[in-house]
Length: 111
Image 1 (cartoon, rainbow, N blue to C red):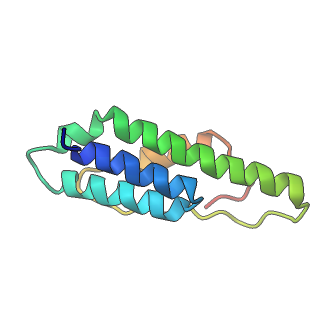
Image 2: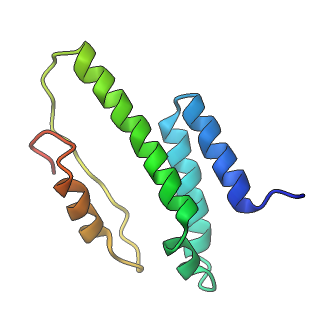
């Protein structure tokens, strides 16, 4: 049986996470979503994709794990956190950033 594009994405993201390469995992997920979003026939697919949701959670868990390790091993002061988002026609970025900030995962100030 041949792997689907979703299978390949899942394998690639998990390989990146196993190598502790969060940036690469995010790039792979971003590239996948960009391909779908830019195809007007499949936009609803991405926004209902359980795979994308689960992979984002896995990436977030890896980031939180790293933050927890840093907090335990370092007493350094935190600096300002900048959150950036690419503005696209599909919208929703401001609300997503608000939700993300509401989780209070970052020290203040957060811009």
